[in-house]
Every structure is written in C-alpha cells, then in structure tokens.
Amino acid sequence: MKVLKFGGTSVGDAARINQLIDIVASERERDPKIVVVVSAMSGVTNLLLGAAHAAANGRHSEVEAAHNALLAKHRTALSDLVENDLVRETLDGELIRLLDRFAKLCEGISLLGELPPRALDFIAGTGERLSSRLVAAAMRNRGIEAEAFDADKLVVTDDNFGEATPDLAATTVNARATLLPVIEKGIIPVITGFIGATEAGIPTTLGRGGSDFSGGIFGAALEADEVVIWTDADGFMTADPRLVPDARTLGQISYSEAAELAYYGAKVLHPKTLVPLIPKQIPLYVKNSFKPELPGTRVTTKSGAWNADIKSVTSIKNVALVTVSGSGMMGLPGIAAKTFVAVAALGVNVLMISQSSSENNLCLMVGSDEAEKTRAALTKALEVEFHHQCIDTIGVRDRVAIIAAVGEAMRGCPGIAARLFTAVAECGANVVAIAQGSSELNISFVVDEDDAGKAVAAIHSRFELGK
Ligand code: ADP
Ligand code: ASP
Ligand code: MG
Image (cartoon, rainbow, N blue to C red; front, side):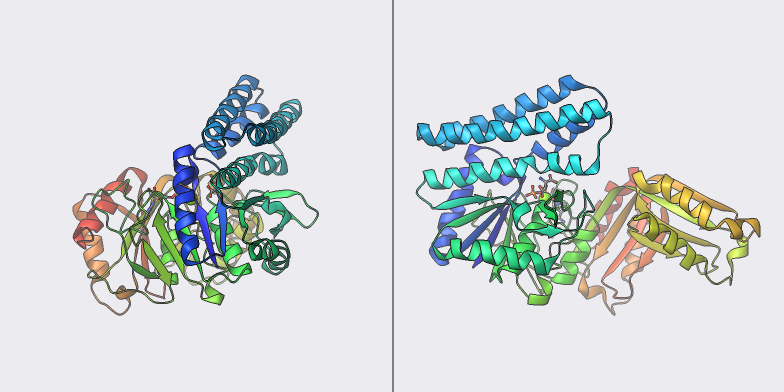
C-alpha cells in the first residue's frame, strides 16, 4: 500500500488535479492499494485565516471578498473536472454549504470581536474539506473509484488548537476500521490533510504545513509500504531552491537528516511527519508532481553517499533571541532549570539553546510572536535572581534568523565548523550565537535576518553543494 500526499500547488487548479490523477493512475498499476491525502488548493488556507482575522477586527468586506474568491476558485476547477451535470450540481451544493458555514462562523467572530482558537481551526480546515471532495469527484470522472474522507472523523488529537498532537493509537484504530474495507474494495480514499478532532469531536489542526504530518500519520496507521510527499520541489535539496538557484536534489538521506532539515526550516516537509514512520521504518519519498519522472529524495534509516561534507543548509526567519544575562550567573546552579521550566509552562517551543562557557549568559531562540511573553514570564520566574543581582537583564533581539548546516558526514570530521564560519565571516554576516547538537549532525547559528540569505548562499558555495 502507498500513501500519496499532494501539497497545495499539486492540487492548485484543474490542470494540477489532472496531473495528480495521472500520477495516481500510474502508481496504481504498480500497487492497486493507494491512499491519497490532500492539502487545500494553494493560497486557500492563507485566505481563510486572513478572513477570520479580518472578521475579528470588524472588516467584514474582506470576509465577503474571500468567500467570493474561494467559491470562484473551486467552481472553476469543478467545471473543468466534472462533466456530468447532476454530479457537478451536487458537488457545487457541497462547496456552497462548506463556504456558507465559513461565512457564518466569520459573522459570529465579528459579533464577538475576538477569535477563539477553536473557531480559527474550524475555519482553517475548510480548504482541505473542499479540495478532497473536488479531487475525489475528479477521479471518479476519470473512471477511478474514489471517496472523500474528512480526517476529523479519523485523526484523534488533544485540544491544543492550531498545533494539535495526535493520539496515534486511537487514530490507528479509526483509520484501519474506516479505510481498510474501502481500500479492499479497490476504492481510493481521498483524505483531508491538516485536520483532526478532539475526542469530543471538536475539529483541530496539526499546525501550518501539517498535511505532510497527516501523510505520515496515515502511512503508519495503515502500515503502508511507503509514503510519498508530492510537492513543487524536486525533493529535499541542498538549500531552498527559492534562495539558492543552483541547489541540487539529494537522492537519499536518513530520517535523522530529514528531521533536522525539516526542523530548521526546510519547508518541503513538516517536521513531525517522520515521527510516526520511524518506529515502523516506513520509507518516505519527496517528489515533484510537476516532474513525476524524476527520482526525488528517498528518506530511510540510511544516509546516502554524498560528495560534500554537509548535505544541506537551511534557514528559519521570524524568530527572536531571548538572552538571560548577568555577571552573577557564573557557577550558580538552577538558573537554566528555572528558565526552561518557565518557558515550558508558557507552552513556548524553544528552537535552539546556547550558553557561553563563561556562563554569564543563556540564549534561547523562540518564535518572534512569542518573544515578549517569554521575556515577561522569565522576568517573573527569575525575580529572586534579579533581586540578588545574579541576573541583570533579559533581552530580546528580534529580526534574527537561525541557519543550520546538516549532514551525517560531519560526525567525527574535523574542520567543518571552521570552514563554515570562515564562509559566513567572508560574506560579512555577523554570528550572534552558535549551537551544535551532540549528535554532530547539525551546526546551527543565529545571524541578523537581513544576513540570512547571503549566509546560506556562502555556505552552499563554500561546501560546493551546487556541483
Ligand atoms: P506543499 O504545498 O507541496 O506542501 P510547500 O510550499 O509546503 O509545498 O513546500 C515546498 C517548498 O519548500 C518548495 O517550493 C521550496 O521552496 C521549499 N523548500 C525550503 N527548503 C527546501 C529544501 N531544502 N529542499 C526543497 N525545498 C525546500
Ligand atoms: N493547508 C495547510 C496549510 O497551508 C496544510 C498544508 O498545506 O500542509 O498550512
Ligand atoms: Mg507543505
């Protein structure tokens, strides 16, 4: 069995959906058991979220504009994809129903004047509900038996709206009970990515870009032979091809390398996708739906041969550096513990940690929009240390970026860091903080956001990743 996940651009319009069906048809010749997981059509989730925020701020004309644009986009695709009038009208009714529900929710939000997280998740998942129905109908139109499924009936999550965590055991029971009989009958389930629901049935989302994670969840639940992420890049590349034009595709990388790359900004894969797949050693492929003939990247336990000391360089923007510093911190136990307990209690995700050896400062990287609340929480948690003057300041430096160089070959290979930081210095970027994991799989550091592009390009060229 194969789980094929198609991202936003791969379901972006009628032509792309037809290409998706070509891919499914050709995969089905090799393996009749296929499960499809889809994202919303490209741009749709952003439009939905923008409208929800506009509603909360009383800008109702924006909601109306979004509603009209969404209806037009899906209708255009529908009329190109489904020939039978009756089938088309029925599906058109479904699209109208889903978009009306979105508009009603926005009305409620604008009356309230605020945006409850569960309402936002309900709205955010509308795009996948629309695209899955469209794709399943388009498949049936081309003679492939297919049925749309909403994943809120399958994926059980906690109630951390916006970034919910799935209960894999409960999800496995649901997915197997619902989907296996369908697959056995030769029908292709077309499942909404990105969404789940709490045990009580309240819809949630798995975080932005979370349809990849859905692919991993269903791959593991159904014990697929492989999961394929169909996207608009040729695979995992040596850098984001939008930033580095001569980036090359990596043929084979390990789960650990892929996880590090995804965690440190390679948007091509959601960082949690591999979590359910690794224990079952299910291989994952990343392939370009525009060029299905290319081999893409294979991700398994093995790291493939490669002609450079690092495999790829990534960057994350919209992060901030929070620094706890004070000359009295030296040798004083417990400050790190208090710091991390306070940050964890806030529910803030720490992306990178670094401490200078003189122990007079401790740096953590968090998302930009969480920096101020992190500072406030730390100021409170470390009140006593401030009072005793062990700590002088808790600073926030915004508009910075994390850069990470990743590759298993750097383990035990001396001189990588020296070459890397020479390249960064030569391009004129100032390094603000550095961290290396003890796995030696990754060196990450912080630069000013405006320097991120040139630092990535300098490392890419220094390690000759484009050759
Ligand atoms: P999808 O809609 O298919 O999920 P995304 O936009 O989420 O696609 O992810 C694909 C994009 O990820 C590519 O277009 C590319 O610009 C970006 N990307 C960032 N880093 C990398 C990388 N190292 N390799 C490949 N693509 C990358
Ligand atoms: N549509 C969702 C998003 O834009 C999920 C995804 O595309 O993976 O975040
Ligand atoms: Mg994506």
